[in-house]
Image (cartoon, rainbow, N blue to C red):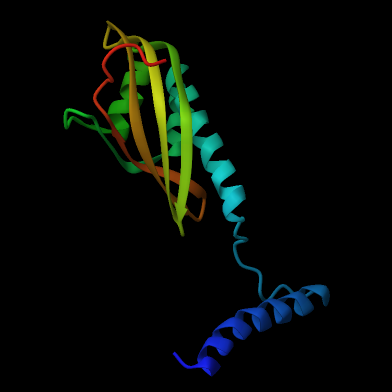
Length: 166
């Protein structure tokens, strides 16, 4: 790439923002498009969204879970088990799953354009399918930016960690 091409690549977005700004000041919304949040803002939104999702699981709040999960969502467990959105919503409403504790720690959020990865350590304690559980595991959740906001499309969880890690 030549120096003039690099300069053009830098100047063109600046000119576009300047023109949009001037048009906006004049009251014409020709350049209005979806506003992109800063990466720092996106990381905060995603951290809060993933924490809200874990809280919804703990509370068996199927409505909030359904709003956050993509329709084609898949969770892969440490043993290879695949769980769909429908499976998770069923477990939240069928009465066999109740968590006294479903909280994540050591959360990190990394953003790659319109895709984000949330990784955290999760302590789950309660009943799963009527059986007592108390375990800690690591998970990675993949979110994709959609016109409606961030959507949770894929999750992968480790096997439970040996011993108590919470």
